[in-house]
Length: 241
Ligand code: GLP
Image: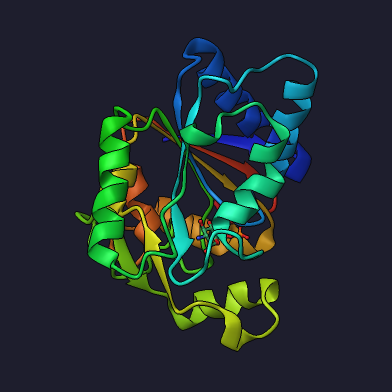
């Protein structure tokens, strides 16, 4: 595990974006596993800036997003499909057919999850997986207690995640109760994993996840076992380690 300390959010975003752009420059047809949440937004802004300057090209890149709410149509303004398009994809030259997000509008969970695992497999696996971390240590939507050996599956969101994500919806009742998420197994199979963390609110979970025992109760802790895992955090998020 490699830890890179950044001064602040902007610096964290730039350092992480550098790692992603190095991957794309080395392998123009790279498969990038991408994440939502507020933390990666600065990375996407930085990559868009470099794209506008002609420094990075996404025309051959494939993306595979971590998760999607079950029951939200992709056009819903809180779907992760919509988030990724408005914050990133619509502003770069990625081909729409190379973008993959779990199909939240498919009610058949077995079919939706199998289809997604096939997409990962057919893409040849993920070269670099970007992650944020939930307040309870979740990655993607793998909540505490999730079995490490699961591939893409349907999850019930915990009360703490529904509470944390209600800020994006009109009311708490509007937050979907389930999601399709890549499992820990799918994440651990990525050749490189990059996590970004910022702010004081994440300091304690960062300490538990990376300096405590590896346990399904803190899903991110499994990343201690990944052969190529980099954590980029700002000073506040790394303040307890
Ligand atoms: C959601 C996403 C996660 C993300 C987490 C933290 O639950 N499914 O992928 O890491 O939120 O979000 P934030 O970066 O806003 O703290």
